[in-house]
Image (cartoon, rainbow, N blue to C red; front, top):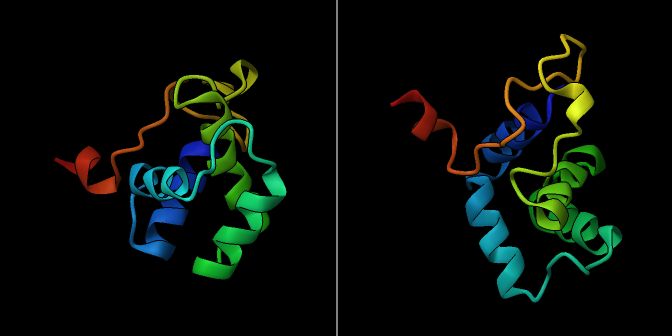
Length: 97
C-alpha cells in the first residue's frame, strides 16, 4: 500500500483530510518531536485507526508532505510505490476535481 493510499484510507475512516488531522494534532501539541506511540495511541483511541495507517500520518508530521515517502518507493512499481514524492494532504475530493 502506498503512503498516499494509507492517507486516503485514514480520510475514509475518519471523515477528515490528512491536513485536518495534522491541524488537530498540532492543536493537541503534537509535532515532529512527538513520539510515534503518542500519535498512534491518539488516532487509535479517537478514530479507530490502526498502527500502520497512523505511522503514515506520523511520517508526514515528522518529515512533511514532501519528505515522508522514501525515494526508493517513488515510481518503483512495488506494493508501496507512490506516483509522486509529494503527498496530497488536501483530501480525496480535491484530487477528483
